[in-house]
Length: 85
Image (tube, rainbow, N blue to C red):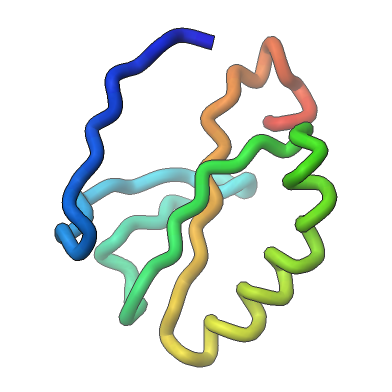
């Protein structure tokens, strides 16, 4: 893993605009219709993520009707970790 200097922002800072594809290729962005976002950086092969996977799905089902969209970003290299593609 490469060392990367943290770019921490103050709590409450407006997130910068971004757009990312989902597994089906559909693009999603902060401009989509949601009142709030929970953004998580995950790794599909991480034992902890595997352990809480069902609870993450429950969070999505519970909060979507309240206007909160949940975005999980997996930035792993799909060549090195094909299970994360």
